[in-house]
Length: 233
Ligand SMILES: Nc1ncnc2c1ncn2[C@@H]1O[C@H](COP(=O)(O)OP(=O)(O)OP(=O)(O)O)[C@@H](O)[C@H]1O
Ligand SMILES: Nc1ccn([C@@H]2O[C@H](COP(=O)(O)O)[C@@H](O)[C@H]2O)c(=O)n1
Image (tube, rainbow, N blue to C red; front, side):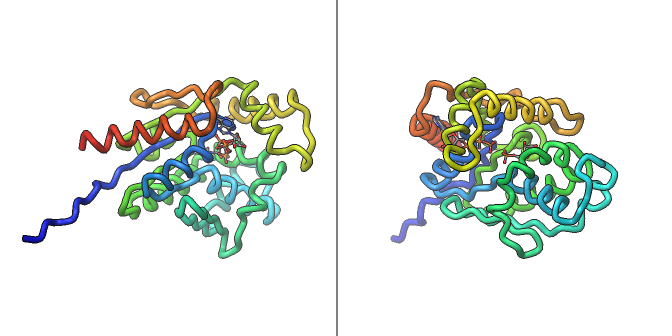
């Protein structure tokens, strides 16, 4: 008699936290290890910000941003080994990481119309991910996917986060540690302080302080949390 193949039920994992806590690095590795799709929601907010800048929209003008928000078509590829992001068919994976976009993204992402559109997109991507998905951002556990099977909130001290970011920038856009620290705290404050769907830990999220953990330790911790959830289902 043939036995039916054992299927692992699709699981939805939300990973949130402030800038530089290790969300992207951890999420890609965990999704790869566990065969899940991966969605970088920060890249989507960066993509719409890039489009606003390209099209001469004043990103400080919330009304102008809201009026234009539905115009760009943002498409995210969810392979954790090769995530992609396009705007109107253009690969923007490089341009969305510039200092200009980074400095303007919090203003654009605070516009309620932008959040409504991007949240709809995120939910439709998650609903279509048959084998399960890991979605990382700022409001995934609280707003986008409040029924996620597992919610993780990553934190780290500003010093640890600034040191990680400075390590990334070395040789490219030389910035001192203090300036990097100030820039990420400014972005956190804007993201936590906005009215609509701010950066926040969901009540039922597991908090992991990554300050003194290696990336590998964080990955192992999250893999274990997902496996524990899967075992209960
Ligand atoms: N536990 C860790 N120990 C040391 N370095 C780490 C750790 N986690 C991540 N990093 C490094 O810190 C930097 C920032 O990590 P990552 O981009 O994953 O953070 P993030 O939370 O996604 O940031 P952002 O929200 O700004 O996109 C990367 O260079 C990454 O390799
Ligand atoms: N769920 C999310 C994700 C991101 N944002 C905004 O995008 C910015 C860039 O995010 P990164 O993860 O790429 O650094 C972030 O600072 C937020 O303004 C968001 O609002 N909600």
